[in-house]
Image (cartoon, helix red, strand yellow):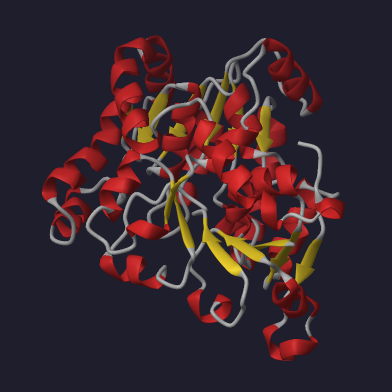
Length: 363
């Protein structure tokens, strides 16, 4: 039996393609993650692990029965107690893996390598026998980008099927721009565009009181603007990418994933790409690697947080998308490799021996 363990909801897209192909059960320590998973994937079994209950917890019992545990974060202290084979699939694109991060993964039996960039980071480690080229697993769930998919989604969510769709996908705190840019975009983006605002799951799934009050205010502004959707992790991110025409991002993760569809990018300038952060990282990683990492910001136009003419930058980003295409394609190849999904299929075949017949699902 395969168990998929995650504390954070943002790991679910990396685990779900394996569940769809192989079956099994999800386990989480957070009620907020269980609620979000049930909301987006209502048919998927998910069990709560209450560490305070020890072996009396259903989640603990499930992990003890498991033959394989697949997870998106190291979770070394918790997972080391279980006998199952352990697989690290990564819940993000993991642009930075420090020696401490690599050490934290030593308890895994297998570490699934996303692409050339991650292979480069792990090349000097002594974990080579544990590495499996897996590709980026969420790509298995990325749907074909078709006019029908876009029209159906926009109609169902009350957006304009004839309009271009802008996705604002910021990072979480402390680098994210949500508190500065969400309301600004609502007020300044012309109504001829659909606007989808999706805060980072660290704000939406585990929302604090301040965040919840802020969402209520933004919901009112969304209704006033029209052609706007505030998505608090109700939609699949893969679907949003498949129907979007421009991604507004302030860091690496969302922008890198958007490269699968070669979507135009508009970067909100901030702390993630700041010179001080680059200088700090260059002291801990090879300068050549950091220069390559920061070249993501050259894959699209830039928007200062204090920008006065937001409509002009949006129009220019859409109009000049082809100018940045070679950079987007080169960056995608460095991070992910190919789009053919062959490596993902090989990982599924590798895990199939842990999947009992009664738990297998049709993909």
